[in-house]
Amino acid sequence: MMQDRQEDNPPSSPLHTLAGQEHEPLVNTTSTATPGWTPILVLAVSSAVLGSSAQFGYNTGVYNSPQDAIRDSFEQANQSIVFGKHTKFSGTENSIAVAIFAVGGMVGALLGGFLADIPFLGRKYTMLANNVIIWIGALLEFFAVHPYMLIAGRFVVGINCGVNTVVAPMYITELAPISIRGKVGVLHQLAITIALLVSQVLGISKVLGQEGIYWRILLALTLVLSVYQLVTLPWCPRSPRFQYILRQDEARAIETLKHLRNTDDVSHELEEMKAELSELQSRPRLGLLDLIREPWMRWPLLISIGLHMSQQLSGINGIFYYSTDIFDTAGVTQPDLATILVGVVLVTVTIVSVILIERQGRKTLMLYGLGGMSISFILTTICFCFQEAYYSDSNKLTAPGVLSVCSALLVVFFFGIGPGSIPWFMVAELFLQDARPAAVTVAVIVNWSTNFVVGLTFQGILDSLYPYALLVFAGLCGFFWLFTLLFVPETKGKSVEDIVSKFKSSSTNSKPDH
Image (tube, rainbow, N blue to C red; front, side, top):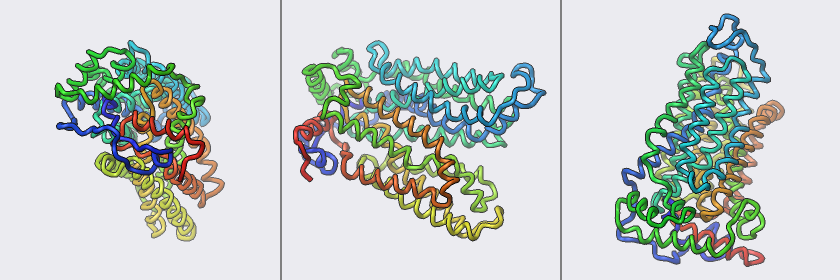
């Protein structure tokens, strides 16, 4: 539904103009009443982001803190008979349990785009059905009597999260009116960051990150989010765009629009959907390979891939994974609690980005974020170099250590400004209805796979290049800053049709004028 409003005003020149300038709208999209938040829209968005997006955030962070407790529980010979007998949990098996989550995410992302386009499922019922997967995964984790059972549970939970990262952003983007489409899109990342923070707090050793049944409860708490969605989502509407364009049910789409906007005047959004349907009916239905074969679709696909690669190759996971070591080296006496500060900063700045997204625009915030991260990584590296000389007592705070903590928090701050949230929903703004699921699927698979590669290689980079390891990510952030400046369009206030038309017009020119 959100995408109903997604269509607004475009630029009318080749790719670089699309990427950098504001233009007058081709169609007057101003109406007497600007649609915004309504009760049913709030319910639908909250059901999607808390029941799907938050699943991804919670399960991303929940396994990090209790790893030692899980290993000890498996290796204790006096476990209760309910949870099995003595079983060794090797370091290799633990590493597989960490990495297999991303593998499941890639499988889920591949499934998500396919399922979301099935007429009787669509976005809404794909999310509902996906709850079956999270229950299977969580119960496997809770009742794990062998490390392989826990690994299987992590894999299944990863599948659920992979589906969620494809379908939830599409659903909420298609529900939102164009006036708040960016804000609604950022809520996906906000839910992820809040859930990640909650998992970090619950996972500390004094709460649920303990041996016995505690860590099992910690992993199973993800089902609370599932229960919320199972209770609320059935009362929420399907995407009006999905109803109108894929199911071709105009009457139901109009009824849904009126309900979502709390007004009988939905003629403008209806005209936008009619224009999109007419465009889609004028050509054969596009598949995954068409994204590559069609010249005018290659640029938005490459931009989508670049956006998601920038999120993972920015090095943010290095800060997440090794923030405890950074704080410990700085002389912070409770590095576990200090790590929670990273989550607090990320949640806070994501809330700020909700406010800024419709004022500053997507591209501007991406540039601020990537540029700020690059500079912050350089500052962190300088602090690491000085810390080598100062560091002698892990319980003593040093000036370089404190500055390294501050610069690491700056990395998190700038990540939350743009790269953390914008790639998740911006891809959906670059494609029409028939190509959107395939494009989002490709981009999210790239996101998951890049995350997996970074997770496997970061420790090696850190060990071999310390204290200069973070300069690698400073360079990557600089590269993606330049990529964003040159090629990423500003989609704020523009309709999907207008954006796509610019890509089409640019593909007719052999060379964009700069």
